[in-house]
Structure formats: structure tokens, C-alpha cells
Length: 570
Picture: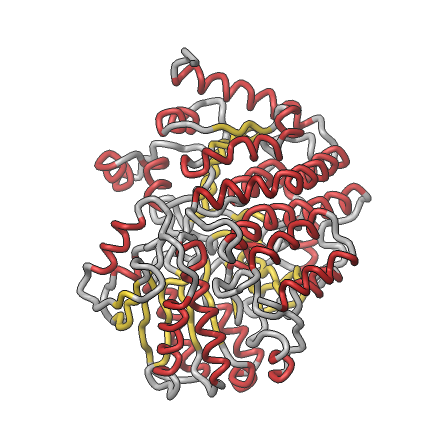
């Protein structure tokens, strides 16, 4: 047993991080790309063990469809990003800019958008019908986007010091992806402190980061709150990056409890070093009224249920407030389908620590609730008042609790009201979802619709998709809408992922097919994607997820039939 004190252990980690920063400054672009390629191979090698441990942590039954979530949001998300970041390095090695080969177009508000998905033939096949753009801040020209892309890799020798990365405990790709972004985009060495929930994954993370650990540029470790606090405060660390809650961020920056409240009121932060963060929030799902078929109602109800029930609701971007029109003739039909979708999803526990008290708190308010089938914790709040300060508007439940509120209107008028409601009433700006039939989108008009999107202040906006697709898209950005201050941080500051290393991104806009294949062709969207494997009702998610991992590790044409065969059975 170690006899080191907390200060001694913090000094040791900080000293190693300083040495790692010096080592990182001597690694060329080619060397950094080679490390990523080794990393990809190691993730592939250890993926099954990763998923086995994740399955046990979350109380899932091995081999059942919900295990697919762990393949997709764990090893696949990590591999998909690492492989695409390696492509960016390869372009820069050859003297090119990261944006070479990517279209850039004007969008409303004196902005330009970089079209980041689809970019390869594999994207067009595996994510058929999905697209994504990164919208840059107002006033940034296409020339500036191209000239400034690359961030820390523009001068790899000019390392910017050291960073403590506080890993998340809910989605198990977050910690490694955050570490990679700090290494490559911020150009800092990394001390990755795992969330206690993920401590059992330490051997897997040490194995996949082995080349970086051997070089000294990454440390991965478990620790208690006392050591974590000592590292954050240590002079040997130049920056902090965290994924977690707004309360945790404020405790770090301002201090805990009454001390923190007093410091915030006085404008005297306890920590003054740079901190970037992704902190979640209350995500809206805006359902635009229209004339839908029965199958559309059922599919989109399952889509919305997925936004809430994936990972038992323990997602920073889980849909929490469904906004519907009280004038929609099919409103009751949709809500009935949504109740069925929530109740019929596979049984799984509300596993994340603290879920029970949060669910109890959601049910104990003045708003009526419905306990749905499936698991005892699944809760619907069917009558949130849009004019009252409902807890669901300000509290991230982080569990299987979904609320519904009603506004008036249709078409562009409804969208404008719903967007204003989301901007003004809901806490946080990480992700917002819009569901709209292609016929109604055409009636609004492409230009008017993009103007409406420009007014929706969220870091990722998904149209007929879930914002988690933005998380999975390696060239997209992931983070809060810019502009939050330390005393009102909401969903955080800064971005991660951002595989093109864009200097001034504002948001990512994701689009998907309103219907799955083959019905998508009847609505003018020639998409080949069947029911997506991240849907909670997908019957073959585990098999499809594993096959996606093996494909991402080494893309080959011969692997595609197996992926498609599994996906089509979902």
C-alpha cells in the first residue's frame, strides 16, 4: 500500500505531466498520427473487454440489445473519432489545411457552414441520409475558416503545458475522447482522472493509451475527491477540462457550498486557470405539427423515446422536454404512441448513481406524473405549464423522466414560439432536437427554416435526428453554445471532438431522414438507413454495434454486408 500523502501524490502526477509536455513538444505530426493508428488497433483489441465491463457496471444482461449502446457509445465512437483525426493529421503532414476537400457555404447571420458529414463513401453508406455541418461564429469568413483550422497542430512543437481532464461517468467514450482532444487540439499533456463510476475500466483505458503513457504524455488514474481537488489546484497544471454537472463546475471554480456562493457573488473565483467544460442541460424536443401516417407517429414516438431512454436517461443530451402544438390534430395520437414507446422499450435499470432521488424529486412536484411500464422508474410529466417555472425546465433529471408542454400554432409560427421557449425557459444550451415532416419543412421554406435554426441558441441542433448523432460525428463539434460566463456557465465553455480543428465554431447542425429505409424513399429522402442501431427498440443493436466497431478499426468492403444484414433486421 502506498504511503504517499495527497500532496506528494499530486506533486508526482504534476511532475510527470510537465515531463510529458516536454516530450510531446518533440513529437512531429507524423509521429502523432502513428500514435493514433496504434491507439485504433488497441481499442479494437480491447473492445470486447471494454463492453463486458461497461455492461456489468450498468447492470445490463449480456447479449441483449441494450448492450449495443455500449458498443456504439464506447469503442465505436472512440475509433470513429481517432480514425478521422488521423486523416486531419495526414492532410496537415502533406502541407494541406484540415478543411481541404470540405465544402463551405453561407448560412444566415453572416455565418459560414463547413459540411462535415458525409465526407467519405463509408459515411454515405453507413450513415445514409444523415448529414452535419459546423456553423462558425458570425463574421468568420470561409477564407478565415481555412486559414485558422488546425489549432495546436499548426505548431506542434509549441506545447501549451499540462491539463487535468476530469472524466465523465455516464458514457464511456467521453473520457478517452476528451483526452485526445486536449492532446491534439489544445496541444497539452493529459492527466486523466477517471470518474469513480468508471474506475473498473482503468485497465482498459491504460491498455488503449499505452503508447501515449509510455511516451509520458498521458496519465490515467483513479482518485478520490481530495486528490482530484489537489491536482486541480496544483501549480503544475495549466488548465482543466471537465465533463459533468454545472454544480461540480461551480464547486471547482468558486468553491463548495456557502463559500462558493459568496465567492460567486463577489466575483472572486477560487480557481483562475483556464477551464473548459461540457455540463449538459435540459434538452428540448420540438415536434412540429403536420399530417403524419400511423407509421410516422409510431416511428417518431420511438425516436423521441430513444432520446430519453438511451442509457436510462443518464445522458447530458437526453431529450427532457417535448414541445408540441396544442392545435395539432394528431397531438393525442402522438402522445399515445409516445406512452407506448416509453413503456415498451427494453427493461433496464436506472443505473446512474443518484437516479432514485432525482426521479422522486421529479415526481414530487405539483405537476401530475404517470409511471409507465417497462421499469418502475420510467416517468412521464404530461402537462408541464409553459408559463410556470417547472422544475423540468431548470433541473437536469439525468434519468428516465420525460416532460411534455404545449404551445399554440403551426408551421413557422409554431417553430418560432418553440424556439423562443427553448432559448428563454430551458436551462442549458448543449443540444436541441426538431422533428418535422419533409412536407411541412418544404412549406416553411429552406431559407426561412435556416433563419429559424440560426435563432436557436444550442451547441448542437438535430433536425429529424437525435443530437447524439452530432456527438458520434468526428468532424462535428460537441459543446455548449458559446458565450456562457463562469458565473452563469449553464452547459459549459469550449468544444471537444471537432476533428477538423476549426478555430471559431459556433454550433453543429445535424439532419436525418424523417423515415427509415425503405419508407424514407417515399418522403423524398433516398436514405438507406433502416431503424438506427442507437434506437432503444432496435432488436439487433448489440450485433450491429460490434460489427461497426470492427469495421471502424479497419474499413473493408467485405465487412459491409455483415453490418447491413444486422442493421436491416433491427
